[in-house]
Image (cartoon, rainbow, N blue to C red; front, side, top):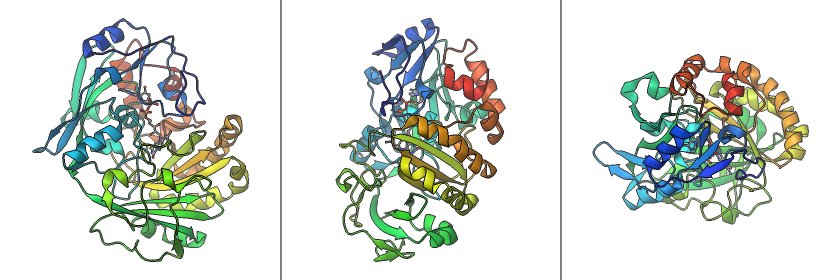
Length: 413
Ligand SMILES: Cc1cc2nc3c(=O)[nH]c(=O)nc-3n(C[C@H](O)[C@H](O)[C@H](O)COP(=O)(O)OP(=O)(O)OC[C@H]3O[C@@H](n4cnc5c(N)ncnc54)[C@H](O)[C@@H]3O)c2cc1C
């Protein structure tokens, strides 16, 4: 079996699809090595194992809304798309979505997946409780009152157990309208990045590091914003539907031109019925303190010539700080530099160490689900609670059932 991008063949010796939690517990207890798979959208081997892969879609289950506490309890294997549909049908919403709705909730949370917005935390920031099946087959429920056991587990890289369900904050359903502007002047982006990033509920800048080709503004209906104007900081309103990748059709993307629509049909860039992004691609992303946005953008400009032959598109987004130990936005209001590369893995992998060295003075943390070159000695100093996480993983999984090559590289032997 391969991952979604097709750049990785998993090395599991068997795949199991339990249909009850009891069956799952039996598999986990008996396995020497075991790993849950979500929707296979990671570009690296974070989800790989040489033991047994468990796919949880056979467990079924549906969301349970608690309108008093404004939370939803949801099976971890459900996709954000399925949850969003359910919430919308019942008049509720999530605070944010990633660029695509196709990903599993547990898989997205475990890698610190995020959308955009200066006041929007990562998708993990909506978690109020998490249920984890441990290596023994027993299940723990953790919530904020459990302190480090909880804040260490929400972004857990699959190292602490199998997420069987999570509880997420919800809010009444809302509408969003989306506008795309083109050709934002480079110097304006540098000078006004903070105002631009804060100018709508969710803002994305797309660049090839020579120019800022597109700005996507997603505004909640009723918010005061300038997005309906014909120009935006010198950029001009797009006249046809746009795709972040210039050669792809805007048809694949959520509605633009300021037409209001439900949050779930505007916050992701890509519509659920189409292949998101290009499909034949690789991704990398670095997350760093927001105050370095302009300096990092200017630094990356020096890579423009070398990046260009490999790049489909690059996106800048913002993420509000959270307190999950291994979240790339831990304790830092952040800016994220995302790269969608062509499927030229050896060329991409040759370039990444240089990009990482250039971004290192800014304390750039790699996205856990995308390609990066750093190892334990690079990432450990970037996370103040890294050692606590390693201890937690060791305590919860002393026989290292959930460990794989990725975790050995990141957590160290
Ligand atoms: C086209 C595209 C667009 C993307 N856009 C964004 C974006 O906008 N923002 C962003 O931040 N990222 C984005 N990503 C990256 C993506 O969100 C992450 O890689 C995410 O982890 C994918 O979730 P998944 O369910 O496919 O995870 P998988 O690859 O299946 O698994 C990821 C990790 O989670 C673990 N896991 C899965 N299920 C469970 C479980 N039940 N319990 C415990 N651990 C589990 C796995 O073992 C593995 O360690 C994008 C990826 C693609 C392909």
